[in-house]
Length: 127
Length: 250
Image 1 (cartoon, helix red, strand yellow):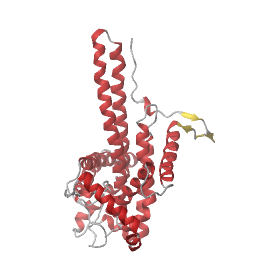
Image 2 (cartoon, chains in turn purple, brown):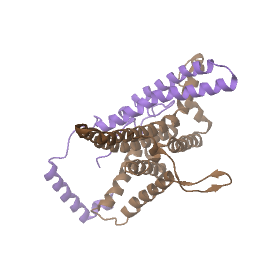
Image 3 (spheres, each protein chain N blue to C red):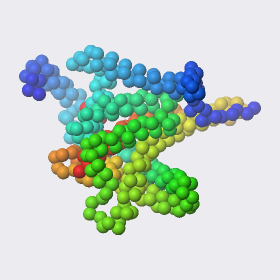
Image 4 (cartoon, rainbow over the protein chains, first blue to last red):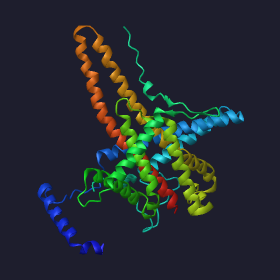
């Protein structure tokens, strides 16, 4: 960092760039960026939707396979249907709470990991 | 005159160079060709883009730098500093899916991300890799992943299977999400495109209505551009979140 600060042509260039930017765009933007953009919200919606349906479908497939294997029809599918619903809802709940993809994920002790942002998404597209 | 429409034909795998090794069909297909083009294009963007290293970047350099910074930022925000070790993998995954999705939109191209086996293979690599990373980092302590804190023993009998199930489901939902989005979008494009020709063959003034499905298709193309980028983003960010779980157990 220090090296770069000392590098005069670069800093001068940075100042000129800032000035030019300010001239074109007005003062540096002050908009709070905690409101997710439309596309982020869209991406999040897509993620959650499949989470709920996919869980039930996969759980039913597992239940069906177990039934076929052990000959316990229809109990495997019945049990796994409810397990699938629960697992799907758990995943959605966790996604919405911003706990990540997170099976059994617990909030990390402070300073260890980055805090999960609202709903686990963050944007860095701007720079 | 009947025009037969096959909106799903675009997903057909066609061998270009038949190769058979001991009864195994290992032909070089149109899907494989598109994957090779994708890899070549991704390499080209990054290698060509990092060639100049100019202070004021050219377009190519901007493209390479933007994609680098996008993924680096995503990893920093979602995984943390330790996540940088996995940058090459996440970056490769993102570029492969993004460029594959976008190439699929070119007419006469092929959308290999619309094949569940391709997306499932990628999701399985992520799933197995993340599990191995978790076990390597935390040993068998990793299994405590599935045991919620402060729950009476009786409830654990119910909760542990649910936790295990919701973990096993990950690679499936990850792959279905990408595959279903790409396949649905491209099928929709083909269906609306299929309305154009019969309308043009219709008698008299009805011909004019051919403009409607054509217009819908043009709008759909823009939607598909958005979906292509968004699904690559979703796949990558979920990979990051899974990595975070494995690295920061508690």
